[in-house]
Amino acid sequence: MGALNHRVAVISGAGTGLGRAAAVSFAEAGAEVVLLGRRLEKLEESARIIRTKSGKDSCVIQTDVSDEGQVQQAVNTAIERLGQIDVLLNNAAVLEPGTVLGQSSDEWHNQIAVNLTGPFLLSKAVLPFMRQRKYGRIINITSGLSQNGSGGFAAYSAAKAGLESLTRTIADEEYDYGILVNLYNPGALRTEMHTIGKNPDVVTPDLIRLATLPPGGATGTIVSYG
Image (tube, rainbow, N blue to C red):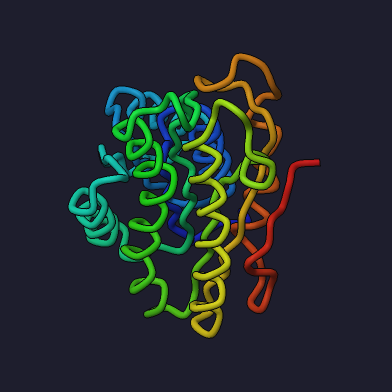
């Protein structure tokens, strides 16, 4: 029996990088996975990899997580097809350099929309279904820049700091409903956003542990790789 048997996991940014690696690992651990992302061809590629490695089909839903209508429709579709949502991995992110002085307001709003508003919208959409079943595990991907900031990454750093506060807020609000909400900092990964770092596959065991925390387990915490 896999650790995630009979669980449904929604993963944003599932077309590449950590999102794809997590989706594959979750499926291999027994989960039914829902793949969200803006690029349909990347999601379908992830679905093919999952089918090859686990023998499982995926629920592919092209979604811009910064658009509330698309997010709600995606969650409704997942419920219609699979009947429940047990795990949410808020992984979708945009990392674009920009100083406070040099960044346009449009560039700022785009990164905040994906990196902070996206997790808010997805969490808000799945929480009613998790509350109904008195069970839920939400994992938000963060970064060391949330604590330290970094010259040249104003919007990304601010968004991740906001995400950490949002995580603690949701954890406090939802604990009595059996919903645990935590942050995960994977460190530098080799993805489309980074050319150096470790393979995303090496951190997925940590994500599975957070996705399978027992009732009354840790909530509102930050777990870091290593």
